Each structure stands twice: as C-alpha cells, then as structure tokens.
Length: 404
Image (cartoon, rainbow, N blue to C red; front, top):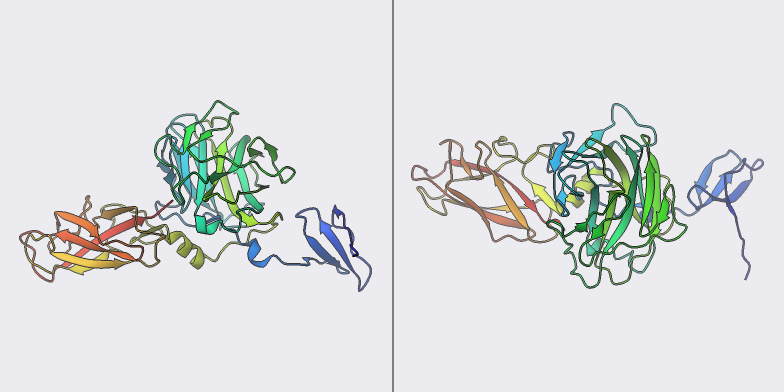
C-alpha cells in the first residue's frame, strides 16, 4: 500500500501555470487544492457535515421578547429561556439578554447579521448561557467526535469558560435538571468552575483540539476582547449519554453592566474547524425553533396581555349565557411540537388578564383553559357571561412551551 503524507502549513504561493498543488491548510486542517491563479478550494466538501446541529446559532429568533430590547431574566442556578432555544442561569439577580442587528453597521469578523448580547445586572456575579440538545439531535455524536465552535466578544477583556455537558446514562432522556439550584448547584469562587446538577457532568475537551482558547480541566478558557474572535474545541460524547448541553459561563464574577456577546454557534460532526458559518435558512430555522415554542403573536411581538388582536385565535360564542362551554375550538399548531405542551399561557388581547375577550361586548370570559392537548394542537374552552349571545366574536392569544 502506498501513501502520501502532507504536512499542515500556511498557504504557499501559487504553483506554475496550469499546475495545481495539494496542501493541508493550517487554518482548518482540510485538504485543499491551490491552482495556478491562486484560487484555494476544499478537495472534499463537507456538505451536510457543515450544518450546525445547534438551534438558532445566529441568534435571529427571540419569540419570547422584543428582540432588540434588553430583557431581564433571573433563574438562580436554574434555567430560563430568552432567545429561541437559548437559556440563561445566574449566580444572583439578574441577567439581561438582547439581539443586536448589524444590518446597517457590519462588524469586522462577524459573518451573520445578528448576535446575542448578555449582561449581568442588579449585582456582580457569574452567569451562564446554555442550549440543551434533544436526544434525537445528538445521535451522530455519541461515541464519536464533535467540534463546538463559536464567536465571542465582550464589553471589556474577560475570561469565559466553555464546555459540553452530558445528561448521563443515569439520567432521564430529554429531562435535564432545572429549577432553582438544580442545573447549577454551586457557582464557586472566581476562577472556580460551577458545579453542575445531578447526572450533568461536563465532558473533558480533546487534548490539542483547541482553536483560539486554552483547554484546562473540563472546559476551554476563552480570553475575550472587544473584537470578535473564533473559538472551538472537540469533545468525545459517550455512547450512552441522553442529551448534550452547550454551556458558556463567566470564569469570574461579571460587574454590573458588563456584557459578552456571541454568534455563529455550531456543534459539528468531525474534528474540522469551519472557516465559514453555514446557517439554516430563516424559514427552516424558525420551524426548528417552533418545535419547542410557539405563539399566536406576530413573530416580532413579545407575548403580553392587552397587546392587540393581531394574530389572535378567533371564534364565536356557541352557547349564550354564563355557560362553561360557551365556546370551544381547536388550535392546530403550525408545526408539531416535540411533545405535549409543558406550559400553556393565555393572553387577553384587549385587557390585563388571561381570559378570552368578547370583542363586540367588550367583556371577558370568567375562565379560559386548554384541553385535549397533544403535539399537534389543543382545544381552547371558555366560560361566558350571562349577557353573551350566540355569534359574538371571541379572541384570545396563546403561547405553548415544550422546551427541554
């Protein structure tokens, strides 16, 4: 058997006319062809392997809030969702999250339009941003090799730590610890890594796989500046893990108002560094996100009471009077959820309560509830008032959550 061994190195000068050189590019470790015109291209394209398994890695979608408005969240040692599929945890109150749009002012080193920006508020303290990946999403990584890659910057120089947590075999599939002090049980002193919850050990990065950061312990340290930098490292998820959780946390306490930003986050099959972030189309990405959270409001509107009727569910009074089934109808979800909704929240479009609104009468039901829910949809029932008459228009907003 014959073999050719190529050394990884910097891109050389182009070869002579009508000649092609094969090289291993030190920027990403890929085999490439350099032609006589100086054009460099990968010999074997990764194709689907270059699609990030992560959801909303470019931070485009924020269904739960007004994306550009810094919104306050607090879950001390637990998890609360902000951008679609992204959750935050904090050592003490509180954290704000917002989307930054660079459409009118492109930022050097960033190839996407949006990024997520996270700030520590109220008190100095540690914070963590995470994404939980479902069992069906990570099967290709189990027993294999995965590269986690992302861009980071900060309002000031700081050290962030990055890791990959497994929901271990002793845990329950698609049931990752949550609730106060359950996801993070102890935050530790400055430069001490947080202690994760039951059955949530961090995986140790593969030695020598760091790009831009430094592997130490069971994470990678990233020295961020005010400019965008790429960081990545590889992990070997075990064969029997149920879920993987990407976690980014502050190595030491952040000061009040101190921020870090990230984008182009991907978890990829194989060891190669991806020099370009190839995200899903917007139309496909929102469908992926809506398997976990859906609302009746416009995509850019934050769910709220008394926020107007645009997008609201609509029906009519079926039985006159103060009857428990004065109206019952079905909301068929636009995308099947990953399972039955965990939480269902109603919003009156025209008043500060959670009841269905009788539009012509300008009055509200005395009860509104979901029934017969599945991943495909649910019934919506309400109790009317004595003055309600058949055929009057009813409206209500709703949001359903099936997050991990």
